Length: 436
Ligand code: HEC
Ligand code: HEC
Ligand code: HEC
Ligand code: HEC
Image (cartoon, rainbow, N blue to C red):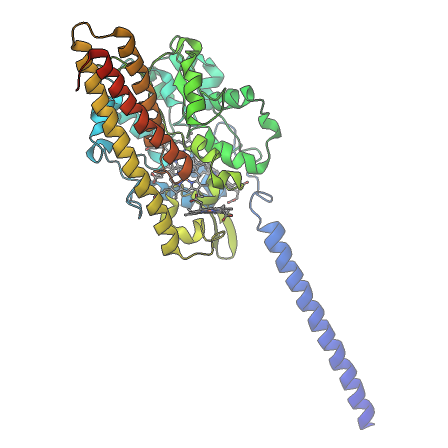
């Protein structure tokens, strides 16, 4: 009897063990499912029925508290551990006085400060010393989701409407609606200039993959552009490609009668002002080519109470190397910081040399032009050379990563800039038989 009982007990125990194993497997499978399916961001977002004209992030935040809390961190102002970039509003000319010479005669000479967080975009626009009574409405394109209504109402007509007439309609700096469709929470692009620019390159945005959209949402603003002189329409100079020389040859064709941003008062050269080409610079670099896009570094996945979500604190990734770089790189945080700083220091050094050589060239051309009987054709050649030299310098200097987004291209561009600036000096001195 006892033996039988024991046997039954054993059988029972076996069943129990099997049961426990089965439960265990079920739970593990469940956990994997939860990780893969339920926690995978973007695929299972609860839709909240946010109306299409709701731009206040606090309202969106009621439904998406984690994303909203991290978005609020964009108001934090702190320097970056690299010593470059950072979120504090400092004038660039303090570190780089050659800016004052190179942008003489245009608004960036008066006010050119370091960028900071998205929630400041409207304040910084309103308070910029670069704007005045006559500033065009096109300046608000990259500052606010209210662009949606303004464009619906006026089409491209908003661009030439004076900014001061539009400001009362602008209630909200960059927020959720700039990047998300509230009906689906999918990523979207609202800037018509971006949509037209990619259409011209044969890209159909409605067919874009999620991965492409992750770059496009940033590319709608962090790019080079110009205003058409007649109607102030915003255009991205991408018809020939996104590299510095490709954009330069585009401008050389005087597109839409645009030939200059301003004329430099010393050299009399017709100059171009480059704007924050983060997207273009990144797009030809090693990270873009490896499928790593802006949010991978600037909006890393974060885990909180077992929930994985996208950090909406869009700032220097070096403030959080562990989340931003370490998912892909096995090196230590110190090593990664050191690599970034090494690139940036090298770029900074060349950027200063280029900027200073250009500043000198403006002066030399100005002096050479004063010399009686100087050769006008050669002087014009020197002006074309300085226009190009400064474009190659500025397209790097106006970019926000101090070279990190594409080190080898940036160093090549600065090398060309320095050479062109020296050529400009030589041509001017040839023109005047001088030695300034
Ligand atoms: C500058 C663009 C941008 C802004 C502004 C923005 N988001 Fe996002 N958001 C993203 C990106 C990029 C992702 C990742 C999407 C993906 O990988 O498919 C994302 C993902 C999300 C997700 C999906 C879940 C997750 O965390 O990955 C939610 C929900 C979300 N955002 C809510 C918000 C809310 C709420 C706001 C405003 C407080 C906001 N977003 C503002 C770009 C933005
Ligand atoms: C609607 C236009 C717009 C979009 C979309 C946009 N940005 Fe910005 N971004 C700006 C402007 C304008 C500033 C500067 C704000 C200021 O200084 O007042 C800025 C500032 C920044 C900064 C500096 C923040 C700091 O702490 O110094 C980073 C980093 C940044 N953006 C990255 C991104 C990334 C990554 C994306 C895409 C996920 C993106 N931005 C999408 C317009 C935009
Ligand atoms: C591989 C990671 C990586 C990718 C991808 C990336 N960035 Fe960056 N970004 C950086 C690093 C590193 C810096 C330098 C930060 C510093 O000096 O503190 C930076 C700097 C910036 C800054 C200046 C931040 C500041 O503190 O002022 C902006 C703006 C920016 N990136 C936008 C973008 C945009 C837009 C894209 C996509 C088109 C992009 N980045 C892609 C790593 C990346
Ligand atoms: C999503 C993956 C991913 C993320 C995130 C990422 N990287 Fe990379 N990184 C790569 C890949 C892929 C390469 C190409 C070379 C290779 O395969 O190692 C690369 C190359 C590099 C290189 C060598 C090439 C160069 O441009 O100098 C450096 C340095 C680097 N990454 C630094 C960083 C830093 C710093 C961060 C965080 C701000 C970062 N990466 C974030 C994937 C990533």
